Length: 391
Image 1 (cartoon, rainbow, N blue to C red):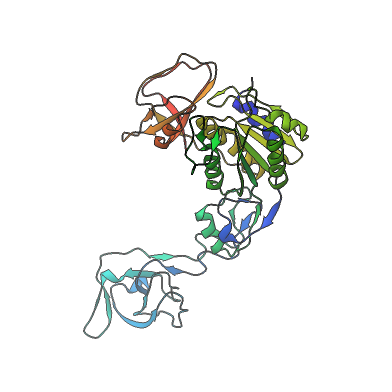
Image 2: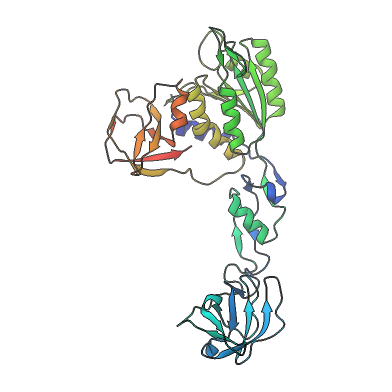
């Protein structure tokens, strides 16, 4: 049985990058840039006051200063500062010619003759110099960067209002199983509400992926084939929960092959979620996840999400926080890598959330993240560093 790392290597080797598109920068959060972003001007574009105060020559700080102009933000100064002069200036405004210092309004007083006197002992220049943040032509964001809100601000500041980005994969989500009913239905004794579909929908939309949600398909080969065909036609990646194990009604692998897909693996040496199917046909992909809620949840995070990001040319490393365990942990079965839900204590230590197995999705509502215990590891001792992956 292959490891998670090997499964990702196989999947990544089959991944074909999606195309690129030009979009409105206000809609770019969560996208991967397909271009370098270059500064089109110096930043700031002029010598800028860092605070409200008076712009003057440092050599004149001991003098009573004549106010020659008031300079609000967005106004171009019309008067240069000469000996014994100053301009009243606002934060963000352009510093006038001749001035090399701005002293804070809090350290000023007005004389009987209407002049301004610096009352402090000393002052910084309080001027942001032209181009001190960026020079025209500087690389400000590299291709391959995932756009976050701070990047949107940078795009705006350099006038890149239509960046080139990789398209996000269209995700189709299907829940299989005749035992499933929709959440608004009261289940009979043999039924359960479909939680995997809404869960996977939320996990996908959290990442900004457009989703085609097909709901529940019963354990009927003909109906299942029809829905999978529809999803494949409308989506880049089809994600199914359930129907990929070895039960009498788990015929999804058969359907996948009948539709011309090559199954690259159907098991991973991991817990929860051993039964995972990955198949491809050109630039279309099918990921079959287990039906147990925790298994589908975790396997979306550790397998499906990295693969979906790969299609967008995502290249940044996964966030893992090294933190000490708050207690000893022991396990008997060590044949599989195991993902366990954890919380962070007030002492910034890691503690395990009470967890009863792959159907216990309620454990994860308490979890800050999860840790991965490698195969072969029997214990983690108090104080030992573990790597927490936030959820």
